[in-house]
Length: 187
Image 1 (cartoon, rainbow, N blue to C red):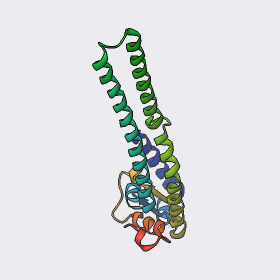
Image 2 (image 1 turned 30 degrees about the horizontal axis):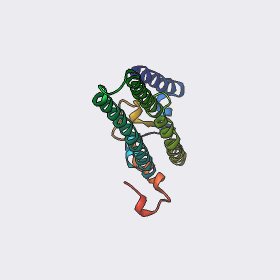
Image 3 (image 1 turned 180 degrees about the horizontal axis):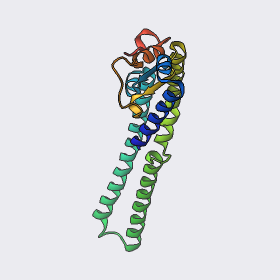
Image 4 (image 1 turned 180 degrees about the vertical axis):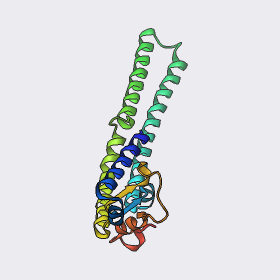
């Protein structure tokens, strides 16, 4: 898949070079890149989102542990009382345990299903405004400094960057941190 992306990228760059003449286009073409991992690991708002998600997941994990504990206690109770219980009462207790186990499984699916669980939905809800802010800042830097292309090296779009190619990651972080109180800035 990465090879395919590289091929498309390489073909597009070659086509641009051929269409405009190598010397003319290369003199005008201004390309920069960012490291989105560094941005997300450094930008205060992204870190706040990670913290919120971590706290929410910890809360859900505690709920899941409590459910597991309740199931285990009922199983132990059933085992210790099994000789004293009638078959009807044993069946009722087993059904109660099974229902709690199904409820536990449903809880896990609702919270951590990769295809639309609450954790995924909450992450998208919280991180999208951060991505929007990052994209606005990238466009602002690109327009202000005359970049035709700004790539993300993490996305696999760049396999090589020459030493003289500008890394705009720090500039992007400066732009994102504008207006934040000094104690909230992270570099």
